[in-house]
Image (cartoon, rainbow, N blue to C red; front, side):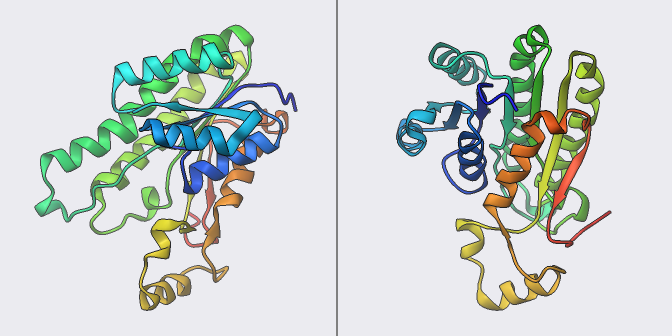
Length: 243
């Protein structure tokens, strides 16, 4: 694997995004991780140290994406590996869901994907190499009450992934998605013990996933060894859902 390929990971402050950024940096890549605040970007830069930088970027804002990519290009160069991890939830039952709860999720989780991918493709095509890794969710296929907006956005991510793979495959650019199940993060730590037991009873492996396991999957998809895999969604959910 060429360890000098520059990586951009959105939403790299904590949880899965941080694990992916750290894993790709450990694999030898220069990594730029994004956060929506300067404090968050500074923390990413401190965590990555000499292996990377933190950059302020709000993927729901076109000007912010433009400025963030310019900063990455000036500091490291054009990314040839893009991990679209940043995303949001605005959970609510559909009957009560406000228009902004729907539109905010779509603007970030789907349109944000469009903004990043469209801008990184030209240097990838010139290099005749690229890896685009989009974060979906097991919820895209399982569904979940109170998350119609989130489920719809992640299903869109998977359709986007398959279609873009067709468009850019001739330039040796692969486009894949990772769909995590329930992963041990700050969010899942807040789940009540009774709910946690019910959740684990549904997972054949009997445990929550580790964010590092998502990082390892991203490292593989970014590697030369994954060069003949494209348009796929890799399910990393402990057997919770396999369809």
